[in-house]
Length: 517
Image (cartoon, rainbow, N blue to C red; front, side, top):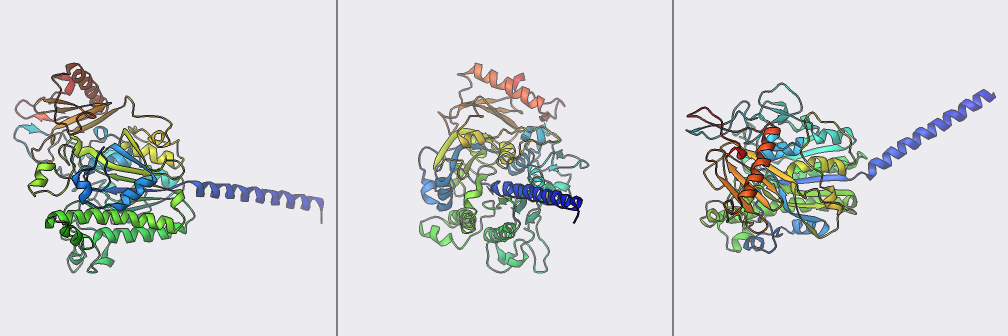
């Protein structure tokens, strides 16, 4: 055998060993990256839980039973001032693109292509907002184009799973399909922001021949039709099937568990409904409570799966809601609406705290100190850079600016990115009725102060949130200097981010910005 051959063989062996070493290093690095589960609930009120996010327990914390939220909180950190947008579409578009709702202009709910969902007004012309939602590609009018953090996760080696409600783009637009956003698996996600029914007896909104009888009919759950399995449970079972598959892939996974619960209709989850009837609740109240506990069981089932599959110590679990519950306390007492945000004011659709403050929990084994609370505020677009940082992704390019700020320093206790930070909401639309804080307004939160401005009337409200969590005392007249300062900051942000405002029909002139009054 020649020396040349022996040398060639040695170099080839060394090269092969080097390649194997590199592959091993990459594999080990991939294994070390944490799995991530974002557990998103729909329309959950701040007090729709047995876990109190206030300084004291309320009556509602005593009524509802959410043992798995309590279990998750024991493992992680509760956030008492976690904010989203006041409606689902805006929140989910901010989540997936990292853009503030002022910038992406999805300022009401989306469903059908090229159709706005605003209620009409005799005096106000509403802006031409992005009622087709968001997308990663150009070509659809009234659409914001953004880069998906899920796609960035996928490109970096994560297996990505979507289960439940999507609501990123209108029907027949690219954004309606979760796979457009980088999800390799899509379970039941489509354009709709709600569901026709939770009941399998009604085929989750389909006729006997399989045709959907509503735009809200849940797709992809045909195997459960007529089985008696509640939609929340069906989605959970499908998510666990996807996790079983993911475990075979030898790569980290990202699961977006986006439940339709606890959105209307208030169907009875019979696994839990009788319990609440025995507690003395009305049929509607008990049905609503059963939706909550069914959602909580799903959380527990996923946590059980992690423990049974030795993934609990390497999985981040984040619990969040997309907006506040549907109503404030008087409507609850009247028996008209069966959700609760007390002690917060108002609910879904409103820029008062009841519409935008959400229950949030983060468990990150080995990083987050168990059984802790964080009283600093965070915003829904903050999830974008935070999740990427959790996954070890720090350098990435996006087609539009990212407004979110990572809250990893809050989780690690190494800093406070919320100090002196400004949060902004812009809602120049007409979503619902004339309830408190609803329609044609914008708001700013900075430190302890929050200012709400109404486009149509020019009214300004100022609240000291730590001292007045229920926003019962408008102190704008007592603090004109703070009103002026926040109005200027709000106005400057709205203009810089490309915010929209309505117009007066009588004059054809736009409503004034908050710093112009």
